[in-house]
Image 1 (tube, rainbow, N blue to C red):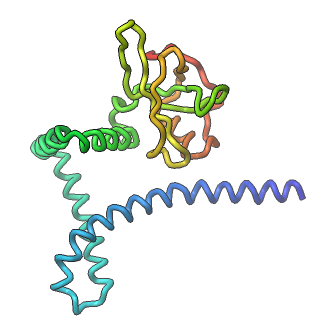
Image 2: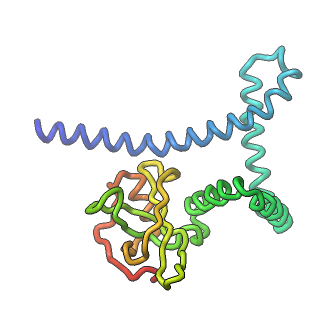
Length: 206
């Protein structure tokens, strides 16, 4: 019976690990669809109000996919990147908006896997209390007048690493690891199941 219960538990956990990424994907798509539909439906409904309701929904979805494709095409060309860069510079001049935008972009960039500037290294730090260790990402280094250095560390939640806590700690109080960003995200999103077998402590900044 013990083996039977262990097998059932393992199968349930396997199902959870399949569902969680799908749920996150569906949530993101729902947010994007809601944003697109909110802009598109009021415009197209007067023209198709006598059509079945599913037609407007289908059109919104098609427009969402088409818009993402067009945006991807734009960013693939130099002129498009320059145009988007100009819009980004404008956003970064708005006090409140720039904080939200820059943080969101850093998180997305880390997921994209093409630029490691957003997360400089993977570390362990004492959080949420003394004696416990949390996995975090160093996002910047702050030099103090007395010569000491502090790090801003993003501690993500699991299994959804797009939310978390920002900690400001002394560099001496964090332990660098040999984790790659991808390995750290796998560990977080799998609730620790996909953890490296060994962790090597490194000097911070190596």
